[in-house]
Amino acid sequence: MVVRWTPIDRSEHVRCVLEFLKSKGFDIVFVSVVEPNSQEDAPPQGFGVRNLGLTFDQRGLAKLFAFPKLVIKLWNLFRTLKPDILYGIDSWTLPLLYVATLGRFCSRRWRFVYHTFDWLEPGQQAWWNVAAERRACRAADLVVNVDRSRARLQRTCYRLTVTPLELPNFRNLRYLTPGRNQFLLKNIFADYTEDMVVLVCPTVAAAPRLTVQLIEALALLPPRYRLVTFAVASEYRQLCLQRVEALGLETRIRFLAPRSHREWLAVVASGDIGVIFHDVDESSGYFMANSDRLASFIACGIPVICMNVPNLEALVYRFGLGICCDPKDARSVARAARSLAEDFPGLDVRRSQIRKVFEEDLHFENFGQRLVDKLSDFRRGVGL
Image 1 (cartoon, rainbow, N blue to C red):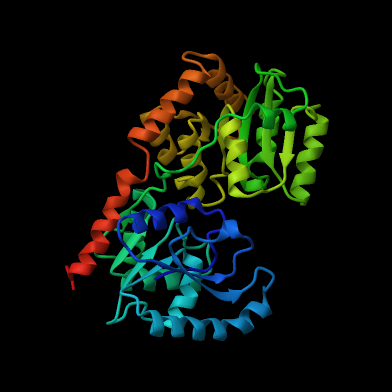
Image 2: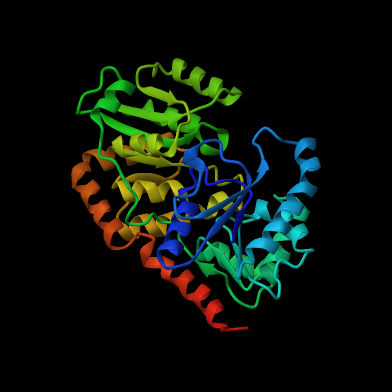
């Protein structure tokens, strides 16, 4: 039984794990607290699916009043489905699991796995969230995290006897990536021509994503360089638009509305250069940066510009995925973009090389067997 507060909701890193386990013979029931907004948010076919009935518009007091009913519904699922493994995903799912298991998480009836893709930094997160994760990690038969940095910090901060299992969030080989779509690009830029270089920053404009700094870097690039990113109505979006107007970039930048994963991926795959920026001064999680967007760029064969932090630098330079730079230095960002587009070996060769890296090295099948082996040990009673 996989329990997550939110539905799949374009979370390809979660979908990839579940599909891989299913392909290895595990019978999976996916339980989400919140109901999916659309069919695309639902788990893949072949999974048992249960929703506890909370809707996206239930917030604050409405969510608090619904909590006891959610606990009862989850209790009933424990009783009727009788899972042999309870697999909790993401830290925000832990409060419900804590109450529903009377603070134990584990049980004589099942083994407990806690899988997280991030890091709850002490001092940045509420103490009760950190305490819940500490309890879950200590109670778990297996803890899974996305990289060695976070895994080792969890072991140190929570005083675990075993370092959590490292499981990178790369895409699986069946991940369907569309080709470059020039018709789509012409819809985005009416004056699009093949000699243009399109930068894609596939995230919603926000201060921690350094969108304004990226706009300022674009102003230093030749006119044939364009930028596509996403935005919702907000004060920060207005700030971005004001900066675009002040720099005279109205024809060179497009802010798209958020969309389904399939439509989002079509935009990503049509770009020439991907951009992954976080303000690393905001949190240690941003500094440790293991971006889910990078996994999609790799699968599509798109070279990237990333911020210069250790995890990303190690991966980007080891496999030739692009260039790391200071995202707050517009000149550094502009140099990185021109180097990828204009220097040897050129964008076409870079794309084919990165796609080859995906097919040979940076795909989920190369790492997922680690998880399968651990869960199979549970089935055989190893470590009981």
